[in-house]
Length: 139
Image (cartoon, rainbow, N blue to C red; front, top):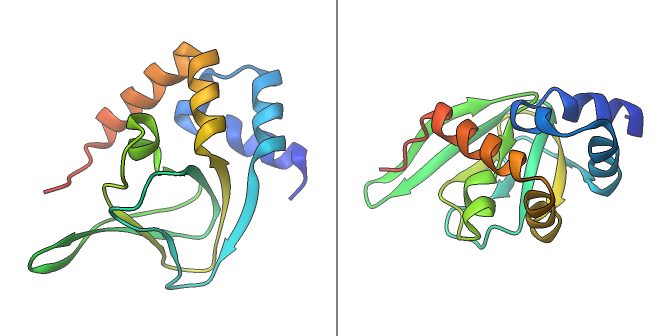
């Protein structure tokens, strides 16, 4: 996938639509492209939220660990943004994300994400609105 293709993909991710062309191009440049095998953990509940990911291809499962075991919350695919809850709050991961299929994601480091939120206040509002609409369950 070229930088141009990554730029177009990022422009289709709901919270990132508030970014202008220059910001999206910069974002596509600083993201790291990673590939995960089915069953591979992308991020684990309880870990420090060190990055935000955008799913490029494939599907991922979001799970929550309980005293009674693991609970499947949802399956997400292309254009899904993951890790934004912990990254926004600068806290620990609230759930685990595991590749359900071969999956490719763009990784944006926490420091870069926080800088972007600081530089573009509309993005913080868009991410907060996205989290609210997603109706995440962490019980």
